[in-house]
Image (tube, rainbow, N blue to C red; front, side):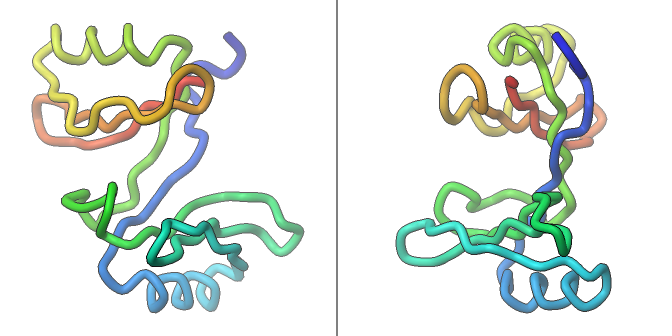
Length: 121
């Protein structure tokens, strides 16, 4: 698989997503597009030329309980295999896979506490 292990994205999940979105637009120079989440919008942060680089999300709905840190997404070839290995090595699966096949993702915790997401591409 091409680029297995590559960091493919990062999301920040917070209570005041609009304020955080505005902060990073001003500090980094990002722009944003909205992602309809039903009763609210999350944000895809993009470069000036429209390339997606990150997400700023509300800490609610499916993101309830995620820590307010930049969570990186690592590319894996087989999400279920990676989650099984995580558990075998003493890690935790904090969020079971969402979606299936290409684009599915899950959140894991290393035994010492570091959190990241894995995404099957």
